[in-house]
Length: 351
Image (cartoon, rainbow, N blue to C red; front, side, top):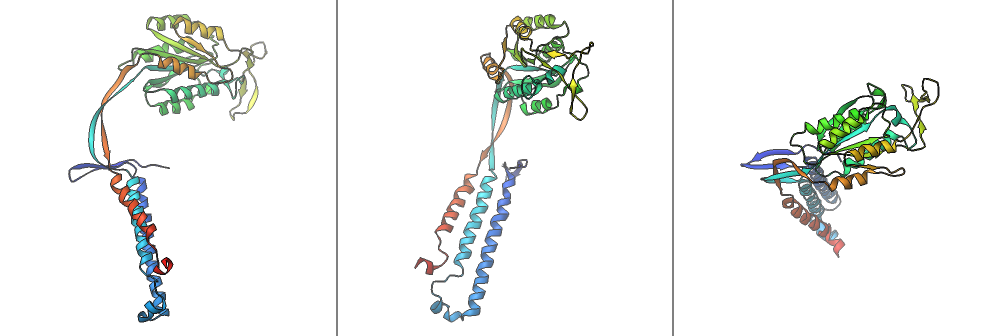
């Protein structure tokens, strides 16, 4: 159900608010129900008066009540209005609390090179990497996450943040066809990930780089990058995406339709394979670990590894909590609805 921004205002010197003002629409519905009940009662009285003289109503139509249905509808209407106020979450009064968020800093280095379009894992390597990263973001608790995307060069797609939904939004925009430089430069991605961690405000004691790639490195910067990460006590948790058997790299046109497979300078089809040994070497060199699940999601094991690390205080701030007062309206609303159900519209029915 869509939500509106909470309403906050001051009433008689008290901080008052409605957390879910959209439910105030039930007030209109309750008022409409009460008016319909009243109009129905007046119409019933008019029809009865046109058929029977007023002095003979008691004798000819004993037990028939004109106003009981109106009272019953009114009870239902007012009860519904009170429930609408309760669902709108009225709040009165505030309390200040000091909240501390503890966790670690995690930078994900995502391979967005052309080889990630291969379909040796379904639906493609890149889509499987997105699934892995979404799983990680869903499991993180209090940690800050950033995103570095790389092909022949690397750039920061999302800075360190605890807003995981923002990282997911940036993740959806990753496209190998929009990368400024082709190739695969794992070393540049690792260097940039370290730079993001070093520039973090109030950085955590434990820091991690999660590398999502098929491991095919076409440049020679990896050793330098891993040595720098090891000296900074930053672990690389590498997640392999792809297969050992290999797969050709599909080529698509501007409309996203398959055209052919990528060829080398000799006209032979290029086969891309998972470099399990290369990714394992990167992880081992930094004290990290390599994870691979050919038919499943490996990120669960990565989350377990992250949870074992020492958490640091990343943020401390004073938050204002509003006191909930929904029970002031929910209880009398329930009472009115029960009374409405107990009220019999006609004494004749009771007989």
